[in-house]
View 1 (cartoon, rainbow, N blue to C red):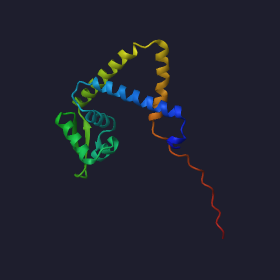
View 2: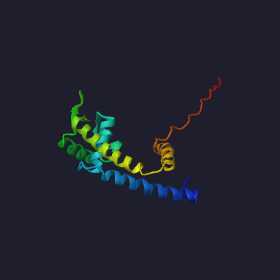
View 3: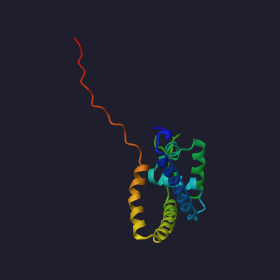
View 4: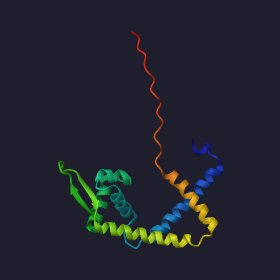
Length: 161
């Protein structure tokens, strides 16, 4: 479906939602006192979630080029947040994983952001909290990867003899 075929109200809602989410994301990032650039924080979180991970896989997850991911890894490594481990059999490949210091840094960032958001949520009334709670499931659905296409059952083939 193209944007032209969408209901104008849905398009307006999409724009409003995009702005609200962008503002909220910006405010949450501002709670981070670690001094890490957002790209470093997201790369560290991805390595923590997916690691040990190859640089190629990290680049794909972060949707950046190989030179960019190399710079990110170097910066995280310099801070002691990750370590590189060479592949057992292929010395051209290495995997990166989060160190204890990196996990502490992520925990600190997440805690600070969650506390800030909880403080803001505490300002809402019961009805607003209920509506927001219901919306979380909808937002999770929007961010979930698309389901694989349904496969058609294979029809038996009848060969002519």
